[in-house]
Length: 248
Length: 248
Image 1 (cartoon, each protein chain N blue to C red):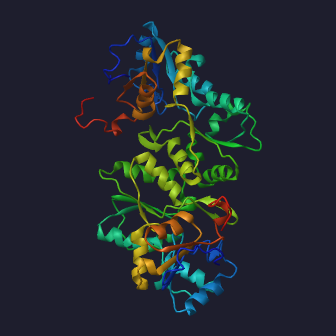
Image 2: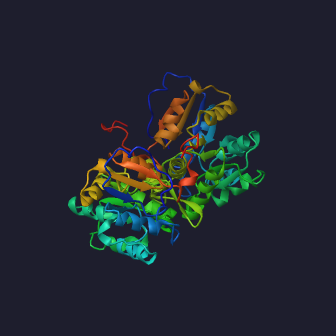
Image 3: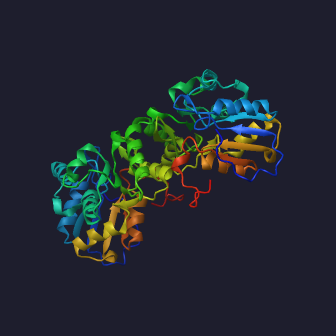
């Protein structure tokens, strides 16, 4: 799983490892070679292990079931996707969302009031990102006196079945441009999101390392919050030219 | 048609009036009240009159036919949409586009080689802005060593059948965000685009006034090129709060 290691955490007393899921543990419905064994080694090492993902195309319980079926020793309480965090924010702020999210993730919003929406939430809606649906989200924002846009992550793209496909961040950018509203990102690389994971693991940022395939959301986001960041060479990695000397 | 006039051109010797089309002359297939008569007055005034549009959902000849059917005294050579300008650029630079444009505008690209694309051109593709088609344009850009993205205008939105709908600029922004490629805009508010119209009218920028319903692409773009800009209160105007004192 981890083929590339940054050197910036060798002098740290690492107590927790936070793992991204898509592109690190699995891809297109299959476990990435060596990832099940790597997770088991981490779990047996005494380190705290958490799973932190911007996955919003399924509910958390379906995601955990998929990981378990692939052989990963994972339980619900250790997996942190954006939607449960988003639901907490909506409840705290008494917000009723217009949702542009994947149909398979809708169940996680079941307890959220959605009538007369006063904000828009977009996730990785994949095929639901139609002209009609993006217009509906746009029109909802334009009709609000104080428009609020939440984006579940801000990833540019990811790999699916060997192809790169646009992630929620691209559509977030389209809505931001058209409405002049800055999106509030729930999920990586938001520090608030990472801090909830750290708190659950009982460690401070300096004691944690984040492992992912996204140089911005995973590695950059973790580093900005005080963690160490590790970039794997699986998932979308090979499409990035992060260092001209090819040192990694 | 023109209900609002900025004062910044009263001291100019205006010799040409450049008119936007959608939201100024027509909307949702109907002539805007008074616009046919206003165009006739301008044509009879001795001023040069040109029509400058970011319309890319039809060919130029179909657009002119539609305007004529609505009663406008317009001919092909006086109408400047982005696609003919785009085709000139593609030929000059030996570029073969992957097109994400409206099906009804494709005929204007008929003489452009499109095999093995080495750039992407997006226009207002409306219902063709599907998840699949946006991914295809994105993938094309990501596969190019030197990715080039052209956008036919950069409008945020416009009004159609009483609703605001996203314009090409929103999708341009999505592709820019995901690919880290800055789009080259062909159409308003590009100065190169305006200058071709001025050259055709035989006037310099200081002698021309641009009339439109888009505060950025029409008015701002014209002013940035040295023209005067006039904002109408038709089309998308009423959705903009450009002055808190409501002076316009």
